[in-house]
Image (cartoon, rainbow, N blue to C red; front, side, top):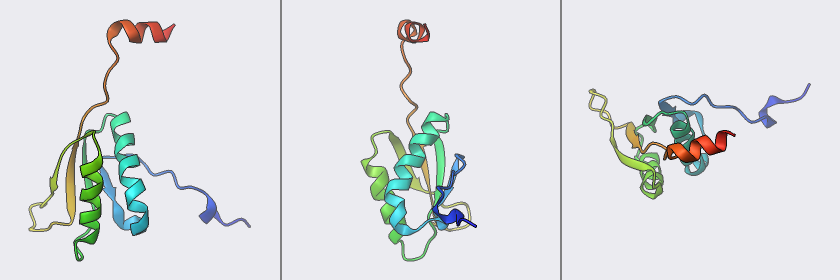
Length: 107
């Protein structure tokens, strides 16, 4: 029987990304890719759960967000419970094609 661990896992794209499911070394590639997929699916408000711990993952996430041109804003999501284990992100929508260009690409 073949081990399914070699198969890539297709992550559902939602407004929430829980980083507890991933290795810390995956975060730098995962966050930009996931947020780009969110934009393509029209999801412009995303909550990234990084946990509290010592704050290392929070810093990694925030450094990733600072480098992304399509991130409009981000802030620690206090969640109403005094917790800082998540970050809320606001994304810029994908640019839309002018009406004359979208009509010409359809033919």
